[in-house]
Length: 402
Image (cartoon, rainbow, N blue to C red; front, top):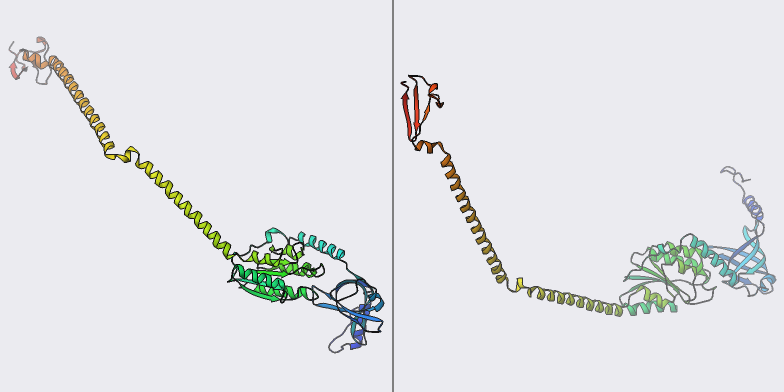
């Protein structure tokens, strides 16, 4: 049950201390894994004290153990070693201190470490932290390279010297941090985050030389792997030798086998680039000259054609053809007109032959009444009728007398 208190009825310190001791005592014995720091073996003392630290957090616990339990370990307990301890937490109310009493201490061997790393690798891969689609491309020519490495290390010298030998204008932001030991993980993460926030840094290199599995263990820590995967700036890792593959290599955007290889990866070689530019310029020149030469041959071929070689002669040829066609058209038109004239003459003669006027020319007359009707019989008129007789050249008014 929670303790009841108020500003008017506060609890004494001893009451809170006894409650803490009671709650912690209920935890019982638990197995704890961590990294050993500050081992203390006092001469003649039967107890040994050491601090167990979590590498992924700023947290440590004071552990008390029987000295014989520690002295029998193989390899001996030393700072930086990873161990599994069976402890019982105890809170001493009189002193207000928390102590873990160890009943069993077991070093974590290389095989166990590799098995745990492999299990963590599978878990992070299932989350997609190692997926190729998450990898960011490296800049072609970075203005500033961020470097996370040990102070005065050969890895720092290899990266800086090789990079500046390839491109002398490259600038560096160097973060010197511990790359092994108790505080390596947190220091590397903080340095990575500082460089990632720097807008001038275009690419970050995490470099460390070779070492044992225990030495490279911080670079397989889950918190560091997640920090590398979360970085917005492209990250290149060069940790250990070519055969070493810590988990941070899988989360990085590019992995270099050595620090020298990392320098070659992030900075282009000015000599190679100049040679490449010369080669490209030569290819461009040859391509342009080849195109010009091909077009010159094409123009020569066009000029050799008759239409371009003697354009006036072609026009004269076509002019003669047009004149011939025009003459043929003129003769055809005249023939058509002559034939039509003959036809008109024939038709005119037929009309003349069949015309009533020709009959009148021979002395005949046409007798008509006043209304224009023709008199065809003498029985159709009477004496005294006024008629008109149409002759070839006019009319004659007549009156019927009998």
